Length: 113
Length: 110
Image 1 (tube, each protein chain N blue to C red):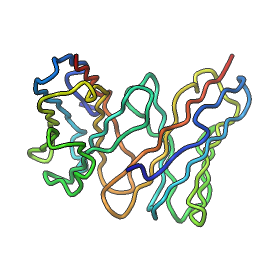
Image 2 (cartoon, each protein chain N blue to C red; image 1 turned 45 degrees about the vertical axis):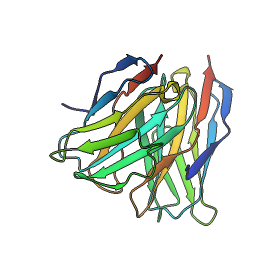
Image 3 (cartoon, each protein chain N blue to C red; image 1 turned 60 degrees about the vertical axis):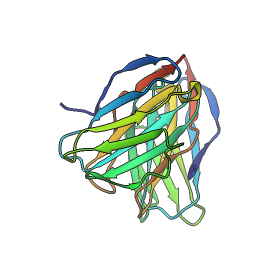
Image 4 (cartoon, helix red, strand yellow; image 1 turned 90 degrees about the horizontal axis):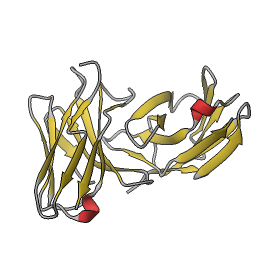
């Protein structure tokens, strides 16, 4: 595709359930980022991938959060035992190299009831 | 933790006026980028200024960078109602992490 694709666009889940969010970056982009944005707030960095490795995962809020990237392409962000405070928009972005702009997906809006 | 922040948090102006937003950051950067966000979803890249540049223009946008003060400003000239959005800055470091501030919510009144 032409842009970064995220799925699902919306997810409603019950507290305690696990969820998996998917990001398809732009083809050829080696860098991939996950961010979280709570309602009316700024963006919170979660994790960065360069290829399949994650040199910086310092933003993951707890051990309930994990992410992986396979084949240098698709990435999944998994949240285990979801809590209400996990409700937010999860944004994925990719870039071709350093000093190049980020291309964002439209995000996944997660609601934990 | 956030490595940058924008001010003001909110700005309301009339159509045709200029809008200025500021960004401050804490660490050394390779470049600084400004993004726009509509409706709380994906961000769109507006302009990138490298650490060895002091000013850059793109259409109605003008961005400045002062590395000694670790600050940047974004000027939107002749604003339009369609410029209403949230604006964020981020600094790219030699490491991997790019972080954002809380953003500036710009409202342009017709």
